[in-house]
Image (cartoon, rainbow, N blue to C red; front, side, top):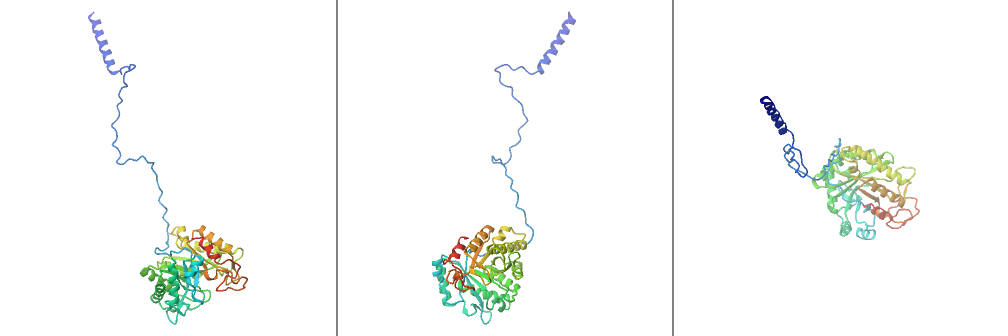
Length: 364
């Protein structure tokens, strides 16, 4: 009996220990047992309910960049010739055509390194100042253009960069503008010092904030700018001058569609600029390009029709160019339709007055 009782005590002890380590049964209606978890991690310093967005950094372009600086502000501006009498009434032209921004042509050298209109008329001639004031009164912006197709260039008569910059400055001050166009045409055998021009423009931009346009010739539809044009652009760029490059898409040999040839020359020239400035975004380079066509009869056999002009404007807009222009506002009429030679005061084709100007205005 004593042994049986002892064994029973041992069995009871084992049973009690087992019960203490086994989970208690959950009866219906009992609360769910608490679940023990590890301590919660400390909250992040900042939380957001917005989805995380990762923006890839823009690729860094290697190589030379287009110089930074003030650039021309006008987007549409035909040339107006101030050197062939009678002197135009720019205020009346702006009212009639709706075109307020124009390029005033051309400043040339007088007897010495002295800026004049056409080589004879002082830049501060009262008649010129009155007609420019009438343009400004209508909200117009004039651009002074130095150079052109005939006459003695300031760029050859002024002996150094400082004197050339001073001559440019006198012309700008007379008109009251900060917009300067350098129209260097070397197809007539005219030799210019591209380094002198570049150094003079660097002085102007650094000291006055002048907004520079370089109006240059094109060779053909496939190669774009002439060799002299490329040389000038490199010199100006190396001097750190920010400039618009205005392409004269006129008076070059081309086959097939004339509008396609003009746009082809512009595209080839733009590719040259993009290769010159590989560190700049191609679209930004294109925005520094302008195209200037010649309305109607060109000096060569080419004739720019209104349809050609409309195609060039549309193509320039599509390419992202920054400017369109024409030679010239005073030729934009059908007063000498059928002529075999280029005329100063009419286009040589049958057209409505201001038809080309209105086509250009659709660019802006």
